[in-house]
Length: 154
Image (cartoon, rainbow, N blue to C red):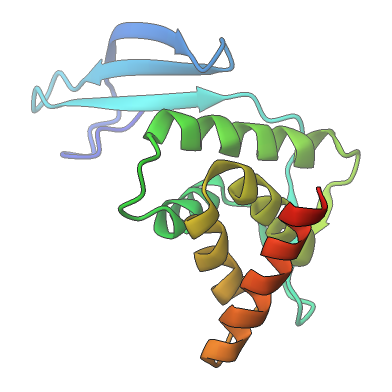
């Protein structure tokens, strides 16, 4: 593992810990050259996922991009990072165990919306406003009316 500070090719592992129910290994490393310390994370990947965008382009699935999107929707909301991490881990497991190596961005968006609806209603509306491309306040009003109706019906 290269040192991110001095680019030295050799680093030593100082501590290893399993986390996230044993699906993640965190390693604390130190560079013998500059003595800097940093953490690396190893995760199990069942398969490489490819995301098909609405315009037909494809890109490699990026867990960090998913984290940033959900974190942005949850900005200043009372939800701990470990809960967000559990939601993301669950979503990624769903995608990887679907049997498909290619997943549409629309399917990802729908799954994220379902997860956010369970996690935080404000974040759910925030994410939906971007995902569903709201342009006017009436778009918000109609969306919230539909949410309220579904809560009354259930």
